[in-house]
Length: 569
Image (cartoon, rainbow, N blue to C red; front, side):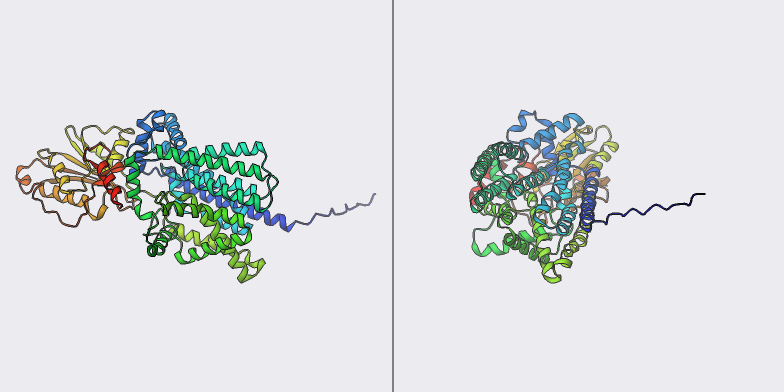
């Protein structure tokens, strides 16, 4: 009987620690991206009602032809043509629902989320890149504007694409004539979908030219030609932007954004910088959707440290991060572009990369090169805490359920009066579901609040009048809604009311009220001419221009805007 033989053990190759670490970091990035996708989908699928500016954009898209979108928009709206055309395509395919209108910004938001780790890794070591990716995934304004009918998420995606492409060129990727032409086309396409990317292209072009000479690049003339082509495209985009606004639009924007331009008095610049930085990094008020909600001092110190250390590590890459911010500040100093999170959302990735780099540098200096490399991971719980201050869904001016309640409870012969600032939303939702009846949209009258009472008086004698409010509040330091409701309580009897669901945590909760204004005895209690108006209001006819006036009012608001701008607000 043959003796059993044992097979010799086969040696297993030892696991490569470096490969294990790379795989671990890769999975960490995937988890961060998954968190970001989930947060953005949470906001998108919440189907929040369109707010004032969104409704104004929607009406332009739905009421105009494709060619009509290439002319100045109504209601003081501005958006790049590529963005508008994509939104128009989505509504042509899927209808006018909120999700269809917001599909384009949602796709751009997801694209930015996928691009960010690719960009971060070109500036940061792996742990810092992972932390920065999670910070971006959880950034409140990036989440919110990925599901709002505005172009800001497209600004972020375009800016990250430019940053990724140029950082590769700085890492010695040769610029051939074919690549140069391809990048010209890329710049043109980016500008079709984003106005703000002009700052990225301008700063990146300047960095490429400086780098070409500082490092004696053999392809420096191709790089200079590339930057020159981008400069021409940026100038053409600026000219188009000027063409796409009426003189009154430009004057209105200048007055509206006045507080976000750099003051011309030198002594006021420091406080102004502190104010806008605090608004961006930590928020002017709890729950703001335009703030990152980080501790202001900590975030500011880490940001400034990161900018300095980025410049020390690589002058050109430091300029890529700081250059666009500096250009926006210069534009704000020239009263050409406001400095704030919404229109400057494309700068949020720059802030986060700088903060991660600053944290990495401080951590390594304090803990040593090996242990300090993991210090950036402390930014993950910090960003989680920031997110918890404003978890999705963000519902503001949630007027759709209010209008659905109105339509379900309206009776034949009922009249409907819409507060002027709610008119944009009301006009949009008529595209989604019919709101039949005798409808009157109010007129903006911030020059004389008593004018609102005269508008209400037109409904006297009706037994059932629905009053719809949205985007109300203490605008211009005066509670218009409170004035109107106080007057209605004086001359009529409230029969019903309905408010937006409690998920709407904004100060401008949408609501509808049903009043009986047919009782002669009650009507005799007061009138628009004698009802007392309490509180201080600031006459501001210019503010009735644009988005606040969904129906042309003929009240001279455009002329008031021009005069206000000429006075230098």
